[in-house]
Image (cartoon, rainbow, N blue to C red; front, side, top):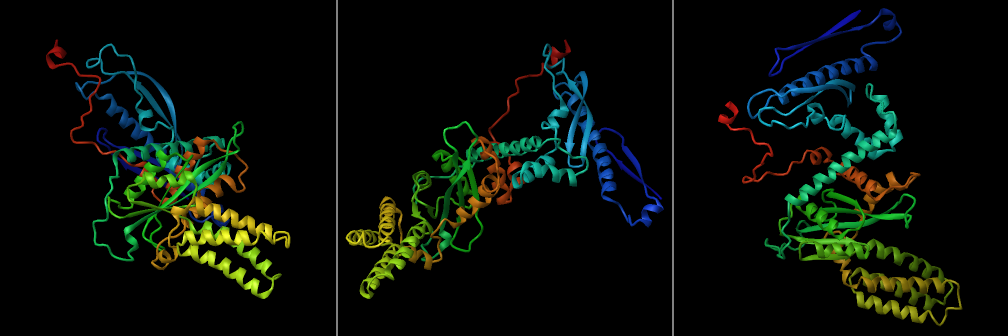
Length: 481
């Protein structure tokens, strides 16, 4: 049994094209259970079609580039070479001529242009670059190479470094597109209050940026064994609202945080109206984001980190209370519970005074039990943490009852999704600051679901903007002479 596949096509210049190829199926294969087209047959068909389409497209583009837009003449060809283009349906080798500039418009100029390299500068199609970037960002490079070899026809990167290079190239382009967005899509940072009617308890008026840091192992030869990366989750509204927008980058640059934060607010619909709130764990590098955003902006200390410091204190106090008389036991437990209640309701000064009193009362009995020293140490650490972030503590209970966010849980969850799973956990490798930043750009675009949109971004052209060519065609009379 033989099947003949015939395809016809036409373009703007040539008359038409026709492609035919056959697929043979024997009765023995059918008896053995081979029903329909196999994976290899599908790869063969797609590879043939891809090779034919790319050859015709490249030939058409070469004809277009040979035509001089200035005088209507034809650019001469210097020489020919072969260029291999990697696609999702296999590698295609095409003829790639080099062209001289038009001798009439630019006499004496000897540089050459290669139309095929203009079409595909990476020697791989955009679809393949995007696909390899997705796989390289989600799994180790070696595993991603094996997946490509199994599922794509003839697409076998001989080394995992090829896939890594493509992934980081896509990350570099994402970063360049992001810089263009930051330049053209500016946000008004002047101080202005909410101009709409102040609706009490409306969480949609608030733009929340939950920000956290992650530590990534650094390549050997540096002073430090790891470096920091900033992960931020920007959303509008309270608990249960949309998933928001992520941005991440290596380092803790205030300028980069400001640019990324303003762009995230722009994407969320911020137009100079609304409340801006930053939630972090109190690190100095993260608190700087508040002053860089449109004012008025508020910084809130993450309640989760406060609760993490309270929990061991409560556990140690509960163990110690079992060894105290009933009256002292109730008093100790009530005081510890009062510390949590005052912090939950934003009574910072009262909480600090109570922590100081408990610290002094336990000093007299420091030798009486082995649990007193850890309890006093926990109280001291909590007091220092609260005093350092005194201005960032708010009434968490009121915000919680209004349905607003009180913790940077979304940012911390994305620290695990973006950084820990790919760069830290079970990954026996180290990263450079630049390489980690480019990989983070790809992983963030995948998490936001806008990889294709970000790669396709084009900066807007102003109406008054004109493009001046360095080569001016000769005037008509001089050309005739």
